[in-house]
Image (cartoon, rainbow over all chains, first blue to last red; front, side, top):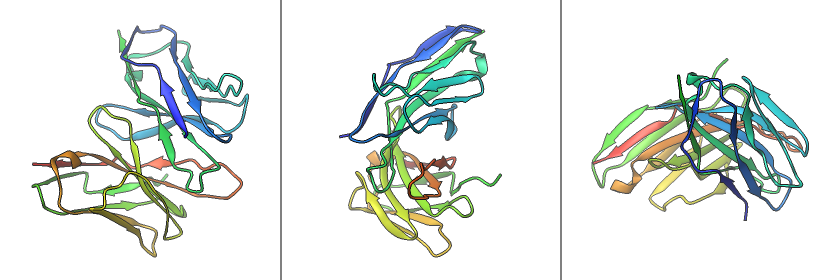
Length: 114
Length: 115
């Protein structure tokens, strides 16, 4: 079945450090891939997405590239801010699945210290 | 831009009681999804509706039921509540255009606490 695996957290960084959160997936088809962010006490916000191999999603300084050969969609940011502290979820949607439901990874908590 | 609306935002119930959660999708979105997020957990898919018909069902207990109405809003009905039902319940909506990729937009969630 389809699944998403994320690196365990928490990830603790100093402000302006480089961020990488690893995400790999298993899917029967060619899924769309997403990163969602959840700030404390809030809902899920779409951060970025990619729909096919070699696509790069980007938003707010975050980037992720859809790598079919390594089945990965790692999230990166060149310089994190304290305001980036949140939980980040990698997710997939399989077009072979008639409902397009999202399957999430376990989430990675990011803590950015001043 | 209009977002997904969920009500209530917080709900406290006793064991064995019933609860109804409501979701109002983004205008012109035809698909609604419900997810359950336990403490420290990732969201788990419960059920989805497309054009008012159930399109998929996940790990939803038989005590739960849901429907989508003619105005596309959806309600999740939960009966015989158990302590383990305490969680954050998210609704998401999308506009499915077959052949293109959907993107789900999430509401703020309803936090259900069962005492």
